[in-house]
Image (cartoon, rainbow, N blue to C red; front, side, top):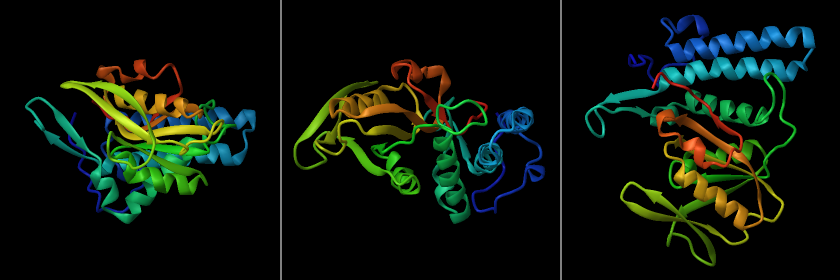
Length: 241
């Protein structure tokens, strides 16, 4: 994939300014056009159709802000850095708006609004903390962190997950999620899916209703979705990798 040239310090650009488009950006734009066209004869509510178009347009700007670092952390890996999304207030705001719109359409058909909103946003240690609390505020939901074992005080529930070097553990404070609350788990990236699945199991241990998972990026060839029990799983941005 060719590195994306746009800097996070640039203002949000219009679709016409994103030339040439990557294949991922072109797919986003085509999806927006298709969704808008399909919604017209069905007379979808204006908020649903316009929200889908706004989401697609915002995704293109966010893709342009990502930075790529070839051969990091090892040769052959093209590392995609999300931190520039937080370095410019305009881009940061666009990210939160895109995540909010993604949740409002979560699990619904194209161009339609979701019928279920989360009561709780659960963010994974540590990059889920970068945007999870702000997203929760926008949705009028509570935020609950999942942390590595031994990092939080008081009684906690624990779940194990496998990493490349062995077993690790996640914890959540007891009572942080109330029985029956609808919960969405968020993180920056889904790779093998083990840590996200562990967070989901903690939600269930506390009696929460896990409605799905939301990530900024995904590494598809690692097939992390297969560990998430078939629940709705959405990646905000798709790249050529």
